[in-house]
Length: 344
Image (cartoon, rainbow, N blue to C red; front, side, top):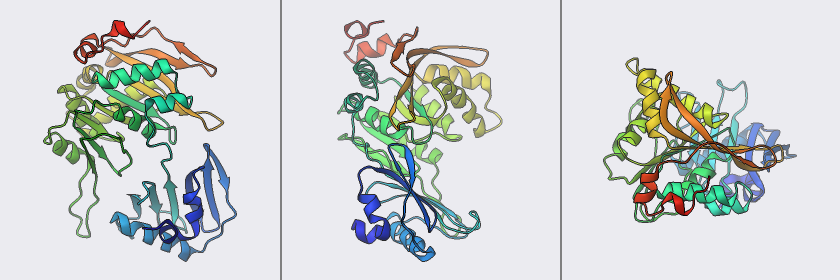
């Protein structure tokens, strides 16, 4: 599908490599984001232009948008992510967001060279992935969680089989043995939906070496924790304001799975399932970087998993925390003993 044909009046915005996101609030109020900052464009469309744009882009994805399904989340041919909401959920106009993934193909060292982290942190994260540590990436909207997760997954040893689970395809790690799965909505008869929790069950039947979930939002957090506690390495992202908040949220989301799930079960499960939390953020200039790297000790107290800071960005530089990366046996088994590269 050619860009000019698919995107019509906004094709020039899609083609512009400096634009990260495009959103249409009304046909005459169209915004873009560059370097994390929003700008109002001088582009003016009609309501029909917006509808035709959405119709053309949805042909490729195969996803539905109508009065019974007034939201849609879809992947576009160029890898961008489309989100649309229509009236009566919105007051009058179709609201469209197109999020482009400009940095999706960068590896951990690429991110370090762009200033997203130091070479010391990059080495620690690379070795942690190679050793099979379970890593949670946290941050706010547009903070670079997906870019960071993609870079981490790309550091997986080439002989391993990786299965990714997402609501909409966004991850694209460079690996030879990769299976990507996404959810599916229900059909016109209200049947055929495939949620994230179903994909978890299917993924475990596919001989994975690692399992990766694009974003943990609801009860699927329980499935992730159970998979990680079974000895299967994995990674995922989660919306949170800090590494500590991410662990607190990860202890809360599994409670949505049912009344029989309690904090007394979740706290030790989280403490033993997650090894590292990488918290990313964006500053006022639009620069995305690692804000914190924290490790879980495996201990818990008062139904809270214990977490220690390894590095924290103070606004000028990274401060080394009191935490230890631990997991000596995992690093040794992977042939990367801690004493050869980790220095407190």
